[in-house]
Image (cartoon, rainbow, N blue to C red; front, side, top):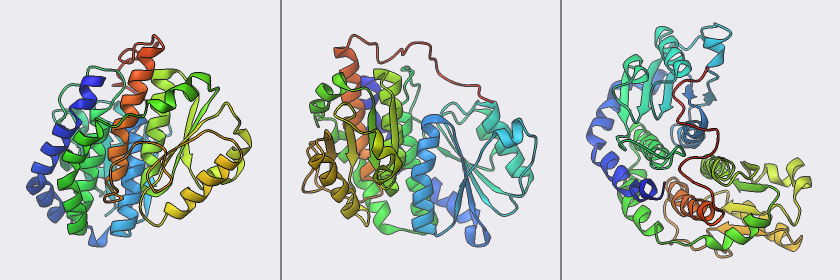
Length: 332
């Protein structure tokens, strides 16, 4: 896992170098008549899909729906997706439910795009267009470089669909920022995690997908019950579950959501909740200078992944082989 986290800057650099091919796909798609975008993915790929949702809705102004593949595989109900943009995200490209959902969407008249690590795979074969991650084989059960690659490839696709120069420039800077993020030390969270009964990871907007991804890794690798949720949601029902034994990890981006995240962090600190905040003038976790809000949440994954991997080893856990888990290639 540690080695694969370290490969993330090179993975993203390759994705950025592939921009001409992504641009050609964007030009051929023709989203002008698309009524909506449907995003399909499971687990970590689903978290990349949440990140993609915010990008599509804020940069392309297309409403986004998260696909439930079981509608096709279990309920056997094809959806009416003519002219829709259908984007499937997968590491292996072999999950039968994702294959079936992509096949059904294309048969219904959707423009289908597969963002995949394995370009020679059934999901890629079923899609009309393929945006490759090309991160190489991932040996750790917990996906890291492929998740970062999925989000970067998603951002590249949206940058080209929207002809967004600012996002393109941020993606050009992303490999170097990921490399610098490898030196960030978030080990200060470890003591609170050792005493925790559960962990909350919160962000808003473009940070929500990465927040859910960090929560998954805390559960998967540190075996801690964890939930990733919107900072707006943490102001309501879930807040009742907070205590001195439920640290909150928060991600703050320099965009329209910043003020509400700052306010929540301050409120929780006043209530003696352990808050570990990345970003902003009141952040407690080491961070780089703020950059583009669409790429910063990708960068924040690097120190979070490293902290979790190191904490697992300190606890005597094997971060590469969580118990009762293996690489998932078949899901229905």
